[in-house]
Amino acid sequence: MNLHGIVRGAINYVNPDIVATYLSSLGATVNADYSQTPQYAAPVQVRIQAQPLGKEELKHVDALNLQGVFRTVFLFQNPQAIVRVQAKGGDLLQFVTFQGEAVQNWKVIYVAGPWNVEYKGWTKLIVVLQTDTP
Image (tube, rainbow, N blue to C red; front, side, top):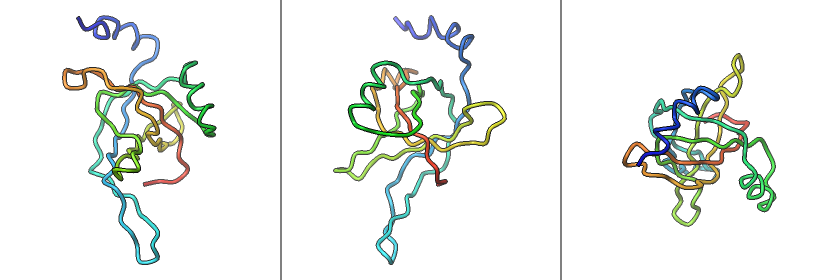
């Protein structure tokens, strides 16, 4: 039974989905000076549900001693957070948080778990606001 499908209308009534641009990380190229430049796949338009962090996410971010502006995002894709050992992750989402503001870059820092992504499910993410542009 798809409970999310049942309550989806109510969720969107209270907090409508927004359109975001999803940039999947392809890793980085090493420049002549040994600095790295991140590379991304072609941008894809996706629907997301952006919300403030819940109590558990706040505890998680606090325990890691992270600072910044964070959001919980529900996405109908399967993004990657940073996995240093595999040199993967660092996916970006670009979206407007408040109407009238400029588009902002948000890095996926934690994947709280996918839920039936193959069957129109969703993935819960924690993202952090970035100051640079890809």
